[in-house]
Length: 287
Length: 296
Image (cartoon, rainbow over all chains, first blue to last red; front, side):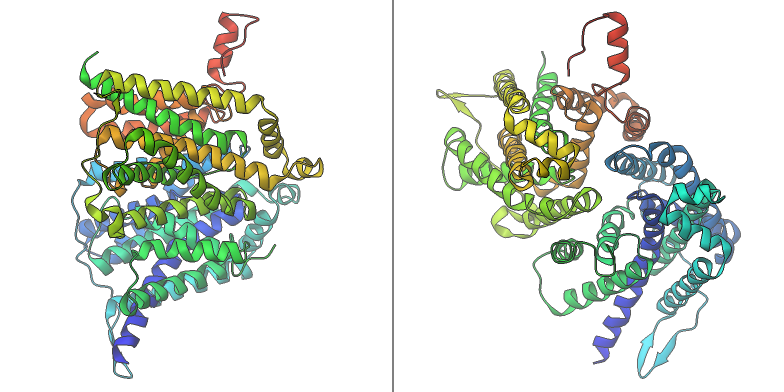
């Protein structure tokens, strides 16, 4: 029972990280209808920037803030320079552009930081906890608390503020939102900035959790998060979070208890295809 | 020609064949596919297994290989009937990852070791390697291009174009989306199977990594870069994308970065492809030779 609970907790932690990466992707898809594969590269850059600023300042908070700012700028640059001019083309054009950005950014990371796996020697400032006899290490506590905090912030932002109202309006209809006096381009850029800053946090958390930062750390999340947003229903934020947690738990438990002859990364895609064939709008999506 | 140039040229010819197959699915029928490397791989593995384990020759195995790949293409084309656009793109990515995982984890397919010792192609008891094999690949490429040309002028091709432009309108005119989408999938994947067989007997060793998702991206890039739905576009794309990394070899470390940046710039400023409507090539051509039409 203990082992099971600990596995479950690990699953939730991994699911939370998936959720943080997926959030940005869902926000972008909801607003521009673009599959932003390069988001995973933003996450990788976030991990590197976080490590850089952490090493320079010695403070994790400074590292995190620096990475978030850097990634927000990167996200806006990608949106302004590449996606926005390509919006009038069929969806595969921005998708290929996005994949090209992903590969290019990975190469930049490899060339700048070197082809080695770097360590991230930081401790998350959260206490470890012993709940009902189950040890919750401080890294897991940190991931859970930070994810919960970011989700609460996003909920507040989208439902309780005027900016959030504008975001929802733009995601429903960009042209009409423009006609109602909303500066839709600014809203789109703001969405990219928020999503990219969250990706930076996810990158840093992964770096600390596994104590590894390397240039191709975004390759697997890049496509797995696509599967997640499809299962959750494209563009639905609660759906994306639920699907992320579900996948994190399913992966950990199935690998731990059932002997499946396939790697865990293929599992996400199998689940995705099953969901698509059964309910093509996703678990939480609506037509 | 030295051996190096022949090797690169052979790879260009093989990739052109596979890209032409993808063009049938994406360019003619309008079904986005980011998993074409899976079918390339299925062709390669089928040919490798039939020749090393079942003892067939390349020529007796080839019809079987094409039939197997076309059949799998028919099965995996069924999702395209349920989902469209973005969803189909992600589904095909998923298919690619699953097929690669099956090759990598099922011992029957050689697992992580791959399949080695694939025999060379013999033609009237002469082993083909180097230049003769290049000619063989070019002959198959010519055949594939002929089939593509015939397809675009046939009734089935017209039906596919109609589906690509507007599925609902085409269906209301009595064109069956099921039939013609699946037809395009079978034709396109069969060409990928042919390319896979040629690849397996050229490299003589294959492993799952040769058919991973980045290869699919590369294939789709070839089609988009050359010009979707054009006849020569995929071949032009293959020539550019296979030979560029070779030309960039002196740049050593940064060659892959330059390559990805070029891809990004091309898709950003020429999203219709080099041979597509209103492209740079087309405009320059009509300026130089007024009244004539550029090849497509």
